[in-house]
Amino acid sequence: MGGEAAKWILMTTARTPTNIAVIKYWGKRDETLILPINDSISVTLDPTHLCTTTTVSVSPSFDQDRMWLNGKEISLQGGRFQSCLREIRARAQDVEDKKKGVHIKKEDWQNLRLHIASHNNFPTAAGLASSAAGLACLVFSLAKLMNLKEDNSQLSAIARQGSGSACRSLYGGFVKWDMGKEDNGSDSLAIQLADEKHWDELVIIIAVVSARQKETSSTSGMRDTVESSALIQHRAKEVVPKRIVQMEEAIRNRDFPSFVRLTCTDSNQFHAVCLDTYPPIFYMNDTSHRIISGVEKWNRAEGTPQVAYTFDAGPNAVMIARNRKTAALLLQRLLYNFPPHTDTDLDSYIIGDKSILKDAGIKDMKDVEALTPPPEVKDNIPYAQKSKGDVSYFICTRPGGGPVVLSDETQALLGPLTGLPK
Image (cartoon, rainbow, N blue to C red; front, side, top):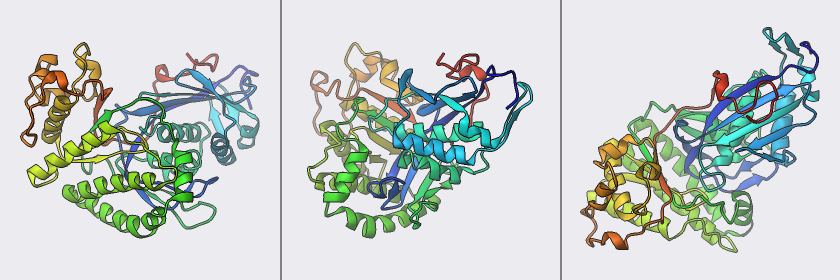
């Protein structure tokens, strides 16, 4: 293996975005390989605001595979982690680092142990696709460390075995997860429909209604739905295939009214299927429903859709505005209905792209308190009676790019001499 015995450590750090499905994945036909019962389409979110950063390292001095998530050591014994590690080690190639005098032959990878550190810059397991970004980043960074020849679409088939939605985080922009037909899952992979520049006027605002871990995990929720819902097969066989074709066309043509109709109706149907599960699954809450009602009223009042909403397996609302001007109007409405507590710092209540606050004419809490009801709302709710605290914070973002390797060593999460978290 070369290099001064047991002293060297090789390391790679990568950053991977999360994604939000606009045509939902819900239900598996194979639990082990994570093969879905329908195609899905997602928008990749700007990794500047929502991403996972992962450092992977290898050294002959490591005696076991270890992983730290957000600073806390977690077990790698789960079947999904093991699937990803096994698939990647099987495809590893020769690696040479002339500077360190290290040469790893591809057969050596089976006997070398790894240290992995991962960090999400957003809440884990709260319905913001943290597992998607996390598993995609794990697979992408390991593939770079071990010099794999596979392209991102082929890597997506490995990431899928860790977390279904992870396969869609291997690309930026607009991504389709093709369910595939093969029993071994070889054709169940991600395809980029368009990059993030294709429709770059879109602005995304996420209302983090709850950063708590959800009661029903996506894995058990899907299993229960497939076993008990009478609607799920109709959705998978009749509804989704038509919506996939229509959504691909809406994205290709940047047809916002069609995009809104498909995004909202598919989100609503996904949650209807959750309600049709026995026992029923409730991912949304009263705040989620009030956000839907507010967007629907506004879209109807304008006569043409201004904003799409979509909810994954959790209460957090992802709203997609047609442009920055609309996003500023949306933010005004959201702050009118869901203001922060009076002692909240506005800077921590609106995170991500804060420049939208400026577009909305809001500099401080006085501006929030002075907001007037939007034209489509008849009642002027006194500030004191508004739903303070129902939203934890808002994230302003946009469609973004795919995974990247971070060459700046200061961004590594593991120490270069110890291979342990910094």
